[in-house]
Length: 347
Length: 52
Image (cartoon, rainbow over all chains, first blue to last red):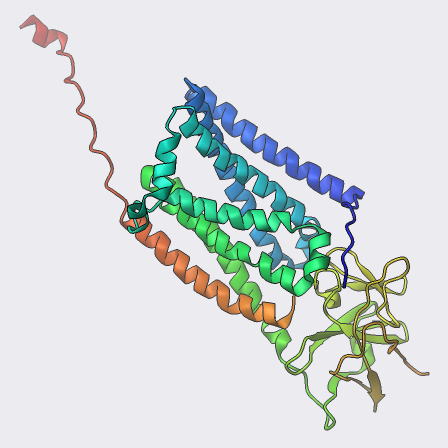
């Protein structure tokens, strides 16, 4: 499979999403620095670098916390799906802000002529052998490296080149990086500042992110249990009318992927629940103008054969369906992508 | 998400939550004590004491 590069395809929603992101980040950093400079006017370049690194550090931490909440929130409640639409741009902006934070740390040392101290802190082995006093800058740099890989591979070119499962596996590295970020602040800022807000903000943020992920994962367990099987191994769904018009019912193949069974009028169609773009949950989408629409990014597939309408070329694996005694049944074995397999009721 | 990703998700987050909570708690418990408060200069004598 080859992957062709296509520039970001801007649309009104993406522009609004990005404009809100940029404005919010600029407002936060600008406001933090303006208030900080007013309360304690920076006397020299090092003091300005210190103010900038605190503003950008807090902003990047807040952004990454929010980004990590979006996925589980969208799985728990569809109202949060619009936030997921352009989450990759959110991630790239968070990386840029984190990078400015890292550069500001180096600038703080540089402006005092003590860059050698920074190098010594990072390269002294003894700093890596103790818990309190561990080189937190190395932890921060490790997290930044993970965010860099994610930002650099966030474009659809890399998604197509690596394939959605590999891309997703790489991008799950953000969870570990977030853990590193918590330790970076716990062993750094939290050791220096005695105020209560640091542990409260840090612990509260992590509890929120971890709690949402665990809750979403727990709730998703049910969906991976295979439905009742017939004697010849097909999955029993129930009467077609039980599937809401224009929507899907999701069933799980034994040991395999989930299957989305859509109904639009008298047509019933079973396709893989994995969108060909980013493996989004197609079964949580709906049918619009005869096409299944992915709830994540709006990718479309024809109901009858799982093929994206021209000029697009994505195809979904489809599944055979049959109606026996008024009960719909689906074959868990997938057909080759793009195979017409829809069932017309009453035909 | 694929089934494999969901499975990884389900065990990864509880493990990560435990590990990070442990690290965070230890970092909080082993924080160095705050700097001792600086000695305040003695209050200036009151007018009555000065008069003595």
